[in-house]
Length: 379
Image (cartoon, rainbow, N blue to C red; front, side, top):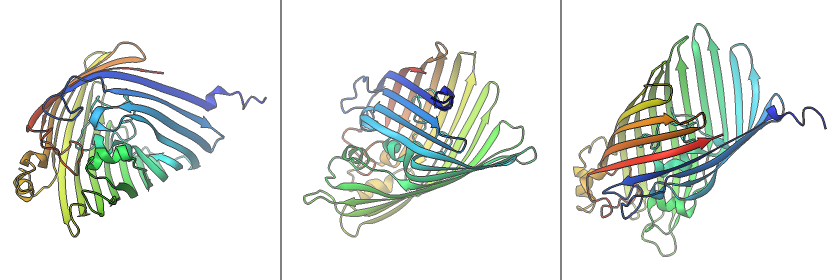
């Protein structure tokens, strides 16, 4: 057996286990009876193997249980072939094929790893849990171009194209159990560009997403054939200093519905939102985090009066927005153990599943709170 075959540096295997407790009162964010829950489980293993100087294979499998946030069970987050096509003193080009991982928003590349993301629950205005499996990655191809020098700094350009399979359980999370047909993800295209000035702790970015879905009604169904268009545009900034970290993302989204409720139905909403987040490192082991986020599903109906009127009063006005103020702490118990705790003051129901069919009975109050504690280990 050659030295190349037994070189353990070519094979990298890592994993994590995270378990916590979570409570969400006055909403079905976690469960229907609003009781204290252990549905805060994340188990994952990822591996990569360097085939040669130009090619690498990588993948990650996880088991998740997040209550109503997303369906419980195993899934493959990504499984890809990476081709290091070109590199020089200033340029680098990589291409990815298979189930590729999205890297377009600030925390897209780390949202699937408990100890790498900033909090247990990341900003729902951008990283909505109901779309977690669709947003993490898709079956298709992606590319990354990087340019760097001491005068310009570092510029990253990312592009991906593909689609994700949507299971029946995922469909229930997105559009609700009353829809008995099949939801398909037809196409997803994303692009982003990031710039880090030379010798700076700041990083600035822009991103765009264009995604289409189709619903095929069942023979007996409560809803009708339909098409959905989801477009999402962000502007972001991140600062990482010795003790302080600041991040923010501003966005506008477009959500178009054709059909579904009845043949000929058409709705085209422009939503807007943002979050501001800061972290301070108190000691080598202890840090604190604060975040403020706001989202309006329709920028022309921020108080939800039109939503309530259009639904004949069936959907309360507070389903037109989602706001969250959050405080959290993180403590490293060792080199591979961490304990996170956080409290959220939530307002509104626009980021509660199912997003297409709001549930005003289970979410009967505009104001609700969430607290969570999670212990994590990684290797």
